Length: 144
Length: 464
View 1: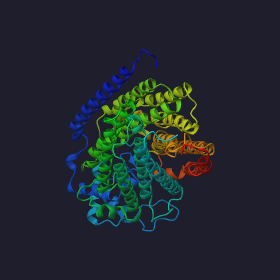
View 2: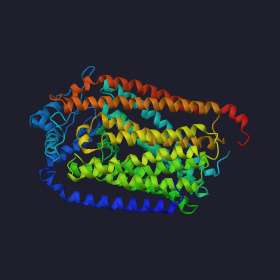
View 3: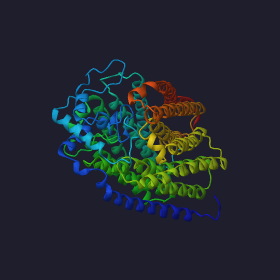
View 4: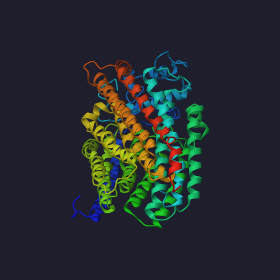
């Protein structure tokens, strides 16, 4: 780098650029938090949805699945599973309940988590609520 | 050659732990790669989610061990004084190792829901989120260890000679600690949860970690090239300036499709499209300094690791990141094997290799040598090429899988289901598994490098 470009100029770009970027990011984040209620349908977060998210986390579902595209890529996307399963919470419950404990020979299989009815309902309601978030039309199609 | 300061030796256990955990990480990587092609492998004993959690958490922990070891080695030398408290460094080492090993054993021996119940996840739920799967108590332990570590390093930096390298490193470490605190915020609203989850994940790896990486690279380059500190520090400032200017607003590339407003499509695309710049500069920087070197340092292996870091970080973080960072592209690639391809090469190139670079430079000195014996360096070079070609092949295989996955599942006129798509791209997963074995052999050669040639060197090195 040229001699006329001094170290203190470089330091000022770092400090100025870094602080400016962080302040801009915090301001944008503040704005985003303000408009999120119009998009995340939080008014539909019931006690069941809250329980469902807890069950989702306590069983590390994100260790195989993606939800809104984030997680592991080993098992199907679940952000839109409610619509993929024909807008049916019972279909989701039925699927989770029917996983064989010993798996399927040679194939990927979801573990049997032995969830209670209450937990299953919560999980299904959580996934239903997730499917109603405004995600800028993602995923591209029903397959997720 | 002896160490300039005795307390630099506390880096040694940190480096050993880092390498041991790295081996564990890679073994679980092999399990995962096998499960991709033989779905019931180790089922239900080690389900995929458990193996993946072990794989990613070991990565984070060994990199943290590496960063800590690097700091303990380079900060006394930069500050021109002994470490503030070597004793604290050793206490924190054993605390961190114990917490880390117990957490990994918890993952493997107890069903995750049981671990959540045992560790009181009901009281303060923070578990079950990608990369932040650790029990809340472990997270608190991490905070304590990191704060103690920063106190130790901070006191050394602030009471000694302050250099650009040590101040940038310290800034990065403080940022690491601050942003980790968002791991404790887990709202019921999934969108909010995801929004702040990225404040840990993105602002770590595409933010403050780049400061840590830049500082370590700059330190090694000063040592092995003998180029004037003024020149190197100027580069360092410009690189990390670009990292923050592009990477902070670049967080927006994660805010495309998780419920956040549309303007992030523009902001995230534009700023993250510039994120390759700091990595490109890092590559220019490394090659420039080496070609302008004023001394031929006998540790040729360290130079190779440093150049390898710069190149593979640029490819993995820069090129493979850019490939899917524009919103219209990411609309199709989001959450596909493309993401996985990028993640592998970026983490290996930028962070795994920078840790190995500093280990390669520091370890011989800690052992009382200027550079490792010839045979050791030859092992290291072999290991570099095996691991690098293994990882590049893994990345290409996952990219092939990803392109086909996106096409079959998301773009075709009659889209296939996720599982059907997975079966039709199995060839690429086999290729990835094979490349994984090449990588593992490279890693074993690396481990072996520490055990060869030591006898001869002991009889010839007078300074020991």
